Image 1 (tube, rainbow, N blue to C red):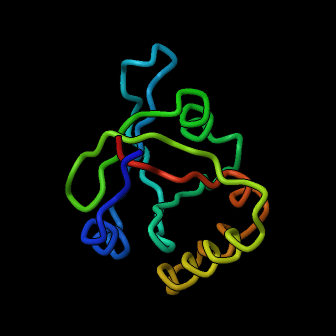
Image 2: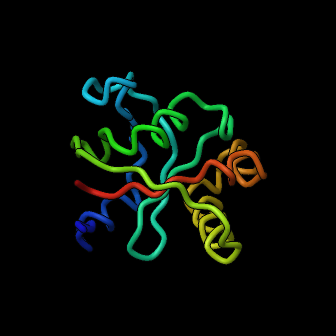
Length: 125
């Protein structure tokens, strides 16, 4: 299994241009890029869906498990893995959102149950 390099994770930690494009149901065509917030926790890249599990990009990411992202000025082919059931990890991801987006009025809603339930780890292919 591939992992992100330390150098790439450092760049991701400060980048604020993530656009996610899970595959459409055909498994071949990339979906319309959706801009979302991202955070790095440890050696992992995470995102959350603002509208929780109802979000169309989240549903596509979970059902197709792959696609691509644009982050830090580059495109990457990726796979998506849902993150659920680990309260300690959820708390660490919440902290990362608070720190990275401290000046945004939108950070508090991202820490609520809906977006928390739609947390996804993004891994390189």
